Image (tube, rainbow, N blue to C red; front, side, top):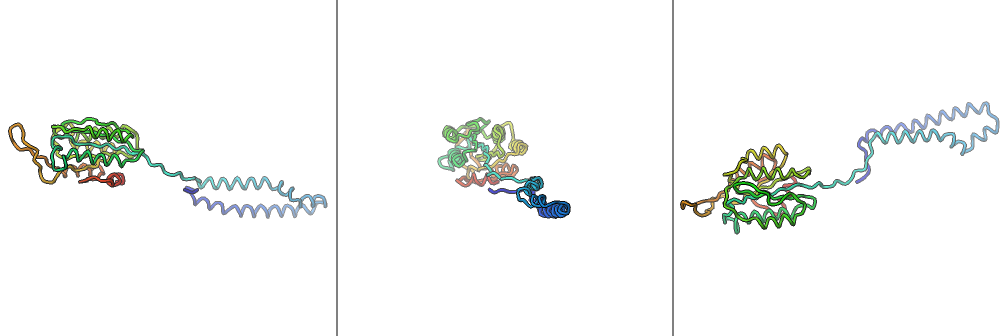
Length: 275
């Protein structure tokens, strides 16, 4: 990027330089004309010598140069540096509750969520940090915030299905806390869940307020079909179903300045970053 000025209007002051130079030359001519009336031939020859003229006018030229530099300085010159992309802290929050074992995604919702998370990790920039939180009845850290994407991908593979309930608020609260653990201008949390909250200490609404306080954007990815999906039977032989609560997921995203997605591809991360 080229050289420039923050206050280019002040460069108009340079228009006074020709006037200053003109007034000086007029003054010098009058001064020489006055001195010739009382000078002998040797003085006239000395006055017409170029070297003598330069020496005599040198202080003025130095002063004029100083004035020009001062005027340029008032315009605040600068050389814009190429903007360096700052890294982003991205924390993936993966629902590992019993409902994520539903087979409406191949082979299950959980495995589909892990595949989606892997796509997001692979599309991260080298300067970005990534962390992983998993939750069911409570939330745990699967991978601390790190710039090493390969480690995060390995951790994703180790996430196994569990039988607990769904504590979305707990998962989000832990993820938001993790996102702030390394200073970076932009912090993003991405929740992959079916959205049906039925456990935990922190409610989704409280987690949203926490995110807004920390100025963290939460994007959500809905994992599940619109219609309830059979999971099996409980201890008493009653049929169990897995549902998708898009209303909750959309509300979480909207209130924190994020977006809701029904699927993930290679362009999803770019859309999230542009938000």
